[in-house]
Every structure is written in C-alpha cells, then in structure tokens.
Image 1 (tube, helix red, strand yellow):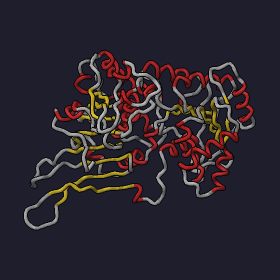
Image 2 (spheres, rainbow, N blue to C red):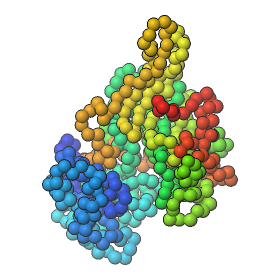
Image 3 (cartoon, rainbow, N blue to C red):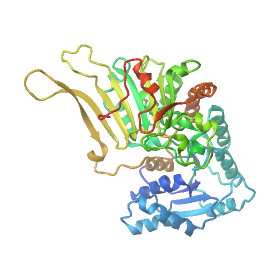
Image 4 (cartoon, helix red, strand yellow):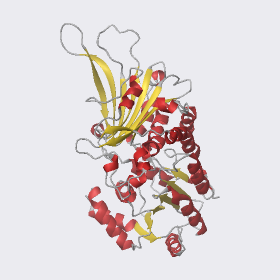
Length: 496
C-alpha cells in the first residue's frame, strides 16, 4: 500500500500535477470536468506545467482529443481570450487503454507519458462505472504507476448497497491508502453548502437556537423537471433512493445537523458528519411503509411517463418497480435533534428545478399579534445560490397591526461581483491540492448505505408498485400525507 500523499505545502499557490481522467471522453468529462478545468486555468489556479490526460478506448491521438474538446466544450465556456483557450488545449493529451483487456500497450503509453515526472502529484480521476474502479486501480499498480504522490478520485455511485460498496472500498483500498482516496459528491462543492458551514459556525446568533428547543423540523429537497430519457438502463437499477438520497441528500443532512467541529481541518468536519449518520434512527420492517414514500411519474400534460420515455433498453419488471420519487421522514437520535423530523424528498418530472434546505422554526411561545407564522431559514443550492431568512414584519398602514412574512435575502450572484465557481471547480481544486475535507471517507459512505439498505430490502419484498404521480406535479399524495399526519406541509408554492 502506498504511503499517504502529502498535501500542497502552500495551498494558495497552484502546483504542478498530472490529472489522468479515465473515461475522459465521456459525458461527465465533456460537460463538467473539462469546463471546470478551463475555468480553473482561466482563474490562474493551474500551474503552467499541469497536464490533463484523458484515457478511453477511443483510439484518439492528442490532436483528435483536442479537436473533440474544441468542438464540444467551446460553446459551454466563455472564450474571451483565444490565446488562453489555445494554451488550455495544449495541456490536453489522450491515451487509449483497454481496462480488463489483454492489450497492455495503453498502459505502456501512459507510463511513457508520465515518465520523468515521478515527483509530481498524480491524480487519477475515475469518471467511469463503479465496476471499473477495482480493476483500474489494480492494473494501474501492475503498470507501476502508483507513486507516493498519487491519489484517486471515485465518482458516485459507490456501489448499489453496503456489501458492494465495501467490496469496492476493499479493492481500491488494497492499492491506495485511505488518505489518497477522494470519493466525490458534487453537491459538497456548491457555494451554498460552503456557506451553510460559515452561516452556522461563523455567526454567533444561530447556534443557541440550532436545536430541538427552537426548530420544528427540517426539509431537504432536490427536485428536477427532467425525466430519464435514454437513461432507463441505468435508472431501472438505481432509482431515486440510490441515485440521490444515499449520497446528495444525506450529505446535506449531515452538514445541517453536525456538531461544531473543533477545527476547520481535513478530518474534524468529516468526523462530525459520520456521527450524524451513525445517529440516524434505523427505518426497518413495518416502519418503512410508515416513514417512506416511493412514486413513479406517469404521463400528464403532454409529458411522457417513466415507462414511455425513449430508452435503449426494453421495459422490464424492474422498470415498473423503480422509484423516480421518494420522500423519507428521518430522525437523529442525539441530544441536539431528539424529536425533530428531517424530511428528505427528491423526484423527477417535478414542476420546478430546485435543491434547498428549509429549516422551519417553532412558533413564538406566546403571540400578542394575530396572523403570525413561524420563522423559516431557506438555503437554496439551485437554480440560484442564496440564503433567505423569513421573518415577521408589520405591513405599513394605520389601524390594526397586520403581519406579513418577509424574506431577508442573500443572493450570492447579486451580492458578490466575483463569478461563483461551479461545484466541480472547487472540488477539482481541492483534490489537486490534496485537501479531502469535502470528500467522503470510507466509514461515511458505509454508514449511509447501512441506513439505506433496510429501506431497499423492504421495498424489494413489498409486492406493491410505486405510487403513480402525474408528470409535472409535486409527487404522490402519500408524500403530502407524510407531513400532513403531523400538521406540516412541504415548502412549495410561489414563495418557495
């Protein structure tokens, strides 16, 4: 096993690295990674010698790959400096490698390209299916390309249950030390997520009321207007619970609920996040039907249903049973959050695209004004990053006092003149600097699966199909009943 990789001694200065992207010609690379790297270069955060090496089975030359990037990425980024774009393209290289095949010439070509730069950081980014993670790392080691300054980035999903996640972690962990493994969740790179930590731990007024004495409940929503055209082969075996809840939503939950860390360092924050996952009350047996909801969108208002979407694979029983929507009532069994429900919700073909955290405070102990409503803190991740604190205010006018909830809003785009970086820009900068704070540790990933697995097992054993909901609606009726049983409602509507 390789020793732990040292971090950049001066994180404020760009340092030289070779970034090797397996799956470097794929959709993730073309839509997210290459644009993020260009923006990083444009902002002066890549050293002049840093190289980006794409690996695929495509048989491309360097010139072919640069032409592909020029054709597919140019329209996604602002090319206001042609010389900078030309210089960025010059960083790009391509090596054809057949992982799992008998042809070893690709590994030899990669070794020749990397030769002479053993003192550089080597970042291997696996933008590929999780089944390739173990074989890639094993063949990488057999080719002699794992150095003490190497690290590996794993894209989600990391397995499809606890056992498969442990298997991947074992395979990758046999080659790389845990401190060299960066499990990425792009939600953790979003600006509002960073500001959640700052809001909580750099402002004194919130901490005294950030607990069950003052907070009624928390809602975490990731809603999408799109369906799954062309993705049914993947989604049939993933579903909303694996695709969104196990990683994105649980990550947001941990950051909302974690205790204040002793320091802002590489392990303190991750230690506190793991404690939250370990404190989640298990949902098992008959409780699954009571505390979880699963739905699948059907055709409505000219939009197709899940089973009607264009797909490269035929409809199967898995297609009929997979959830495109899920809602869960979770509880954290610790001193701070005892009795406070955390509602998690995600769905396809919703009426809006929105990711947000809503902290609903309790009502005032004794109201002397009629018509008031409890305060609410909304942290919005998309489509526009921002924070809103809804407070009660008096409407102007003589006579009786009339109250109205008004937002005290912080829009990052309007408040700050600097460009707000995309999530992948921040995360790529951190991995190049060797900073793992915003990446998931093995115990964190496995704790999340340990909580999710009983829900998956109960759904698999239940003969009932997911509840249908019209495309373009806010989800199945059972999702509203999940909150309605306790007199609560989802944060939807015009002010949402």
